[in-house]
Image (cartoon, helix red, strand yellow):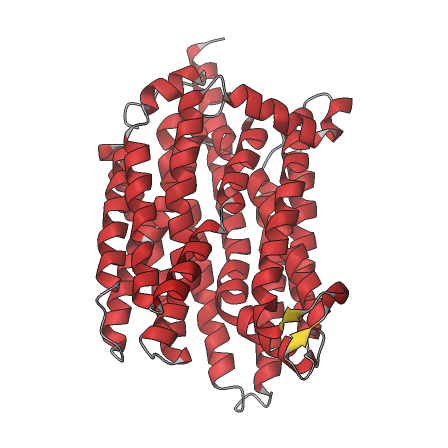
Length: 448
């Protein structure tokens, strides 16, 4: 092959890679609206009210004949969706790696989740069972789609680009969440001006997230390429493949060590996200509009933080940058313990601190893990990554709840979360990432 031909081929490959990367970003843009508008803001309070309207005189609903306090229904449903996710993710990961056909599986998961979310428009009256079913389907579909989405990262970005590409994906997601949440808030706060009731406004906000998710999923489906393999009959045995993946990970102990560190500090991150509004309302006495504005502030600053930390990783490496973010998390949550009640300005400062480190911590953790995955096993290993994320998502809230139960103080409960970042920092600091990359059979970037 002549030099000019080789140069042209390299340029074509680079252009194709950039096209795939831009398409890949748009799946974060598509699905992050569900996490922000549905899970974080609107669905929990609304589904709880529906459950209360269906409750018996003692305040219980009876899904499948089981007595459940109406106020706990949303939390239990989220827990059930985690269980379903853990059962399904290994099947999808194994099938994707064995056939090379990630895109049809991504499309199926994305549109099932989008349809379930759009169907939340029909949640009215006492349809709490429908709400629980749609939440389980949407959450599990999102989890499966993220396994497949994340597994594209090693294929569309060479090692030296991975931190930046992952960070841009997270930034797209947070920007999308902020944009749609602003539109939702206009409708929610001014629903009378639009001639709709408050409950109808909430149902429109919920359904719009599903429509957004489905519409923008078309972009990655058009631009991402499958790396086809010959289909294998073993592809259906997802749980057998998960067991094989776990056994294979024992040959890569440093990859396992990173997963353990990620499991700990990410549980702290997820608990802060889910419990900060409880802390703000119950301990600090802040109203709903203040809390929603704080969520919006987190979304906007997470875009800036993800991009800034992506740049920092190019200079200091992903591991050092994540360690720096965990130190910042420790300081921020520690400061949150001392926030005065009835002072929204200081709560906004806390939200700003969280936003600046949130996106970067998540983005760089994803890109760093991608270097530790043996070639050809991306979806299987990322299913383990998602399982380690979701499988321990109960521990932080449990400790938060137990601390409050034992002390009666939400300040002590929020302060207990500092331990997740301190322990996660210590575990990650011990991981020799350069050796881990080599042991996985991947080229070692200049900065990692």
